[in-house]
Amino acid sequence: MLTASRAVALLRVFLVVLFGVLLVFQTLSLPGQFAHMARENPHDAPLRWPATVIAVVLVLCVQVVIVATWKLLTLVKHDRIFTKAAMAWVDTIVWAIAAAWVVLVGVLLWVGINADDPGMPMVLFLVTTGVSVLGLLMVVMRALLQQATTLRTDMDSVI
Image 1: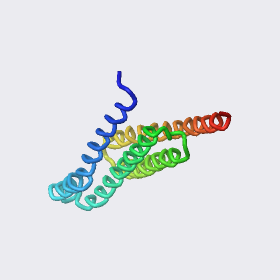
Image 2: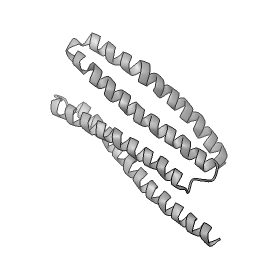
Image 3: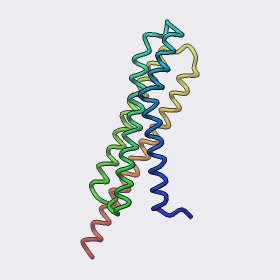
Image 4: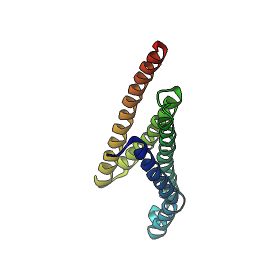
């Protein structure tokens, strides 16, 4: 069975890998892909920079979640997860997800209005719904952490 300390260590390895891959995408792959698309389809060239900015912002939101998760793992490791510091990092995750959701809704609306095929709006609707579920799940998890923190504080004061 995987112990908590091993799971935290393994999760940190994957967080570093994910952050590195996202950094490559953010700085090289996505801008390069949109530049290539603009050269190949000149009628879509005006979308190059808006698409690049949107993609980079969405990747940045994921990177913020990764950093906040790393900080929460540090708090878990030091048995300080039931503190106000943890709440601040969970709030950071909630706000990063909310920012990504706002960007996705904007893209969904723009694509939905301008689309002549339902495929892309449906994919964007699916992704937006997934991010909505993730954001709402984090709000519930935040409330549970708040309750557990209050209980832990009460128990510490009794003991």
